[in-house]
Picture 1 (cartoon, one colour):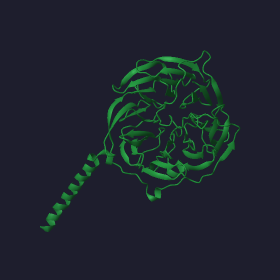
Picture 2 (cartoon, helix red, strand yellow):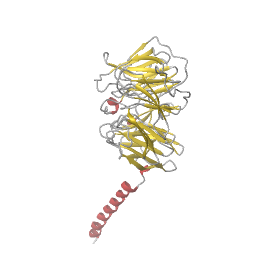
Picture 3 (cartoon, helix red, strand yellow):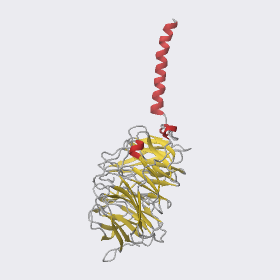
Picture 4 (cartoon, one colour):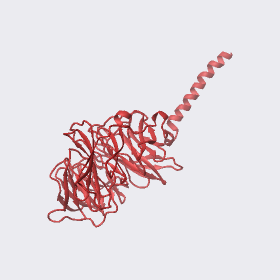
Length: 458
């Protein structure tokens, strides 16, 4: 009889454990899914002591200007130049004044501005080097260039990332996933990481498109390697402060890490290959992973905050867009989808859209510029004109957008009533104007495939 009771008890315990497991997996709150915050001792990495590279000095001098545009989409990643005023609403007959032009290697790397300097990442096909370049904002003359060897074959250009600077340090993210931190004033190497070698990161198709995010005294990176998905790294030393473990299947995309504020706390959101992850900026604790947002072929635009409790995702290749609402308290955050729309309504293949005065503006997959009503999930207006894979920026109540093949800079009113074009002028003779725009002190800096141009729009 004792044995019989034992035979009955064992299956019963197994059933109860199974039920408990099912409840834990499917019914526990999303905020408690993953609690990866401090790295294991064996994962506590320090920046590699790779070869220092070559530092060359030029004849350029930093200008006395103090205006800045310090990282991808600006300091707060909103792509809105809030401090800019008195900008052109139309162009003179002969177009805006072109202050300077400089030749570059092939690529779509955006520029940043700080301390009277313009910084961008270039590629020298003859020397086979990534080159972080510092130019004078006044005349475009080169101040310094830091280069290191890396083999990159032409594949829609080479460099395609925007560096980040806090004025003291400059961080670049190379096409083969090599991250370099330099002294902004001199170009001297501070530290270097090779994410492919050190983390097992897989270089995305068409090379890395992720732009580093500086937050305070640290830089946020998404290696999306075998073990580490995200990490917070000290600018001065390259030492890791926290890391988020890769739950598996999360490879690097062309999308960049974006900051989000909710209930007085800061978070980071990143779109990896198998979904998006939402983590605490302070600890790296994962609030949730949305595995429903996946882009076929390439995930390029970054998600944006579209209000105090909303995030807008957009993608190309017929992904369209979706808006999610955040909820929660006491440090716990959950999400739910509000709406999804098809690519014909909204959804960018390349340029990250802009949230401005309650509406989203972006160039959709068809090439049309669209204003999206986020309350209705419908277009407020759509331009008849097509801009291709155009970069855009908002400043002084206006959208500055560049036709990516004809090189024409347009000024469009940033209002939801109707598409209203205010002016246009040709500023490029080249093609593939895909690089993000920088705007500082009334100077608009843009790039086509082989040339960087500074235009006065004040």
